[in-house]
Image (cartoon, rainbow, N blue to C red):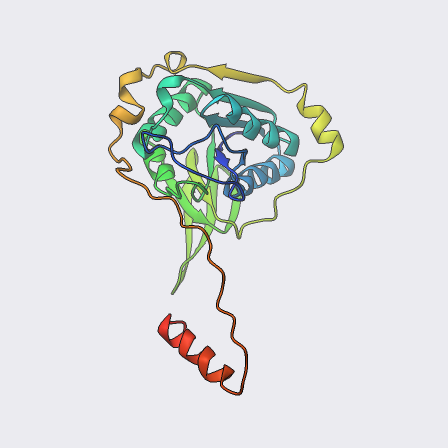
Amino acid sequence: MNIVVCVKYVPDAQGDRSFESDETTDRESVDGLLSELDEYAVEEALKIKEAGDAEVTVLTMGPAKAIDAVKKALQMGADKGIHISDEAIAGSDAAGTSLILAKAVEKIGQPDIVMTGMASTDGTMGVVPAMLAERLGVPMLTYVSELTVEGGRARGRRDGDVATELIETSLPAVISVTDQINEPRYPSFKGIMAAKKKPVETWSLADIGVAAEEVGLDAAWTKVLTSTKRPPREQGLIVTDDGQGGAVLAQFLSIHKFV
C-alpha cells in the first residue's frame, strides 16, 4: 500500500505573525514548524504502515524552509519526502494549492490513500482535501476521528455536533483526519538519525506540469484586501475590594457579555 501525506509548514503560533505588503502571510521573518493538525495525519499513516505493508511519502509545498515540515515527518517514521518549491507558488489560495498537490500526487503515482489534516493552523482552510479529491477523481472521507483500512476499503467515524456518522469508501481515496484520532509520536533519537538518510526530492512547478500563471497570488480566487495589527495588550482593571468588589466584578462581566 502506498500512502501520501500532505503536510504544511506554518508560522509558529507563539511567534509574532504578520502579513507581507501584498497581504500574504509572512513566512520568512517568523519561525515555522509542521502544522500540528498535520501531525495527526502523519501518525495515522504510520499506524497503517505498522499494521501491514505500506510506504509513506510526505508531500509539502512552500518556501525553502518548508522542508523542515518534511524532515519532522521523516523523523516520526515516514519513508521519503517531496518538496514542491517554486517562487510562483507564493500567494496561492485553496484552489491553487489543491491543483499543485493533485499534480504532484499524479506524478508520484496513484497512491492508495492521500492523507491530510482537517485544516491548516495558519489559514484554517479545511476545503483543500475536498478540492484535492475532486481533482484526483477519487472519493473522500473527511473529518475522520477513527479509521480502519482493510480489504481495499476505508471505514471512518465522523463526530458531529448532533450525530456520529459511520462512513465507508473503496480505495484509492482522500482521507482527512481530526485531532481526536490519535496521539502523534515524538521523534526518537533513532528516528532523527535515520531521517538523515531518507530520500527527499525537490520539484518545481514545471516538474509537475503546472504553469506559473495557474497559481500564486495573481491567480487566486480569494485574497486578503486589508489587515490590521492586533493592538497591544492593555493593563487589566484592578479592583480594590472595599466591600463592593463582587458587584464591580459582576458589572464588568455583564458589560463585556461574559454572563
